[in-house]
Amino acid sequence: MIVYNVTIKVSADIATSWLQWLKDEHIADVINTGCFTHATVLQLLEVDDSEGPTYAVQYFAESKSLYNNYMEKFATQMRQKGFDKWGDKFIAFRSVMQVVN
Image (spheres, rainbow, N blue to C red):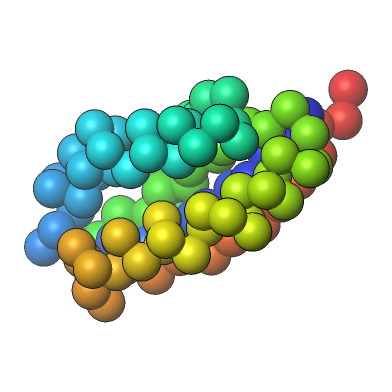
């Protein structure tokens, strides 16, 4: 199992609307690409949130090839949708991990 983790620092003035958009629209769009089975949204604790909250969204893919497919065919479009809607009101950091049992 591959985990595509996106950590996002969100400006306080859009935090509530952004989180609603993430849960109602963006995650569904990403899952509907067929590359991921599900996603989990987490809020980071014990971090400086004076300028806004920080979230981690973890998308789960059954294989590295499915993740690669997402990156090649969908990632640019999905990222652009976020920028088009929210501009520079958020910063994202991405990482890819493998589940080890």
